[in-house]
Length: 630
Image (cartoon, rainbow, N blue to C red; front, top):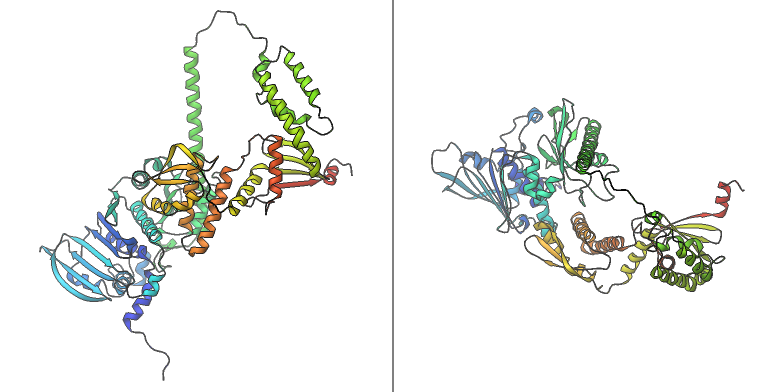
């Protein structure tokens, strides 16, 4: 008996469909490309249940005759090419004739179309089930094409099982729809989700105007035009974000090759290299990059869904892009500095013009030194606070002598400040020195308001106060599973979000409430933050929310248990970072001592949650070697 069998044509088509139709967004991509190839100027897309129940597209393109309407669902039927050589000069999106055949084999499809030069008032309506015509009739319809796709993967349950959450699938559709809007400026696009109009984008003149339609005016205002390279064979143009505007993931990077939306890690890396030392860590630019190359320099037929391309000279393209991005950022910054300089000159000129020369004599105050003396009275105190030379009575006597000197302004060290100093001295003398003796270490002081310096045995140790406090807070978050109480904000923080991001964050409402961040829906596309953990306010709250959304979007493929664990760690690490002591914060000796004590009690105390070291140590022998004592 033969073991090898030839699969039935319909079963083979269902299997092959997986190469073209991976998810609802794949279907959306194929049918929009068909509408654009049909020279439509208006395209409306209707989505229900993230495309799982319904995908419907209506365009005003050239339409099809009855014969073409029947033939378009046949495998490898195409009007774009007739031989392999034609691919080198292809200008259309589709050309292999696989999409509609694959879609009709795994869904229930209805096609309504009318040809442009058809004199009759009737078009053709075809209903396909399992890739076969189920019903055919003439109907009254406008010129163009309407395709209705229902119950995607209804006959391939295994593939349907691997679809992601509705929010994830919807985000994929939204991303591909935005790409078509950006690359086809002359087309009026409309997008509906569950019978609600999500985006209405009439035709525009340039990409910047299109970004304003999609993401808002403020987003578009932070884009600058990319400096166009001068290579005749490779043209790179578009828009990128300024140096002080960034996103929390790579979802705002769109690359187009010969007007075809593609995904290319090398191009994304070249873009990021152009922003080297410009953006903060874990932040990404927004970019809309268009590359135009001669057809013989790029292969668009290397991916089943035509999502990737292959360059003949990839290194050349990447280097050109990187240089264009760097040059654009430098030019923009130079322009800003020049504008600032010109404004300063104009302001100074105006001041001199308005100034009046006084004929009155000028008198100087005798205590001019007081104006330059820091009001941080405790800043000089650590120099005296050691076990050997500490004497509270002597210090009080010296301070009183200083007060008696008339050349020092009384505002610097008045009686109230003296009382504060005495209080600090008392705390230090009663607690810090005694406990330091017990712990066998001595706090030397604070360096650059960032590092705590301590001496322990034969070692000189520096502690990064922010990294150390971050680790302490993170460990406390992990151990404390109880609900944390937030501080009620006098004025709730309002955050604007798109529909998809609003849906994502509202699903985690209870989780954030347990972290002390209470949020609720506030108007259309807005959430209001009503409570916040201590020391976490303003922009820090917004960053936590945006970072959480970005994390959810990027980790959609994880299983639920792994996702929940990583999401907890992600949010807790960012909360710890935002709430920790910052570099530049002045600490008292008591605060420094408490920080060191807490650090010694936690796990992984030698690194912060981002992997940076919390401490750095050098022993006495190394120091002596540097001074050539040994």
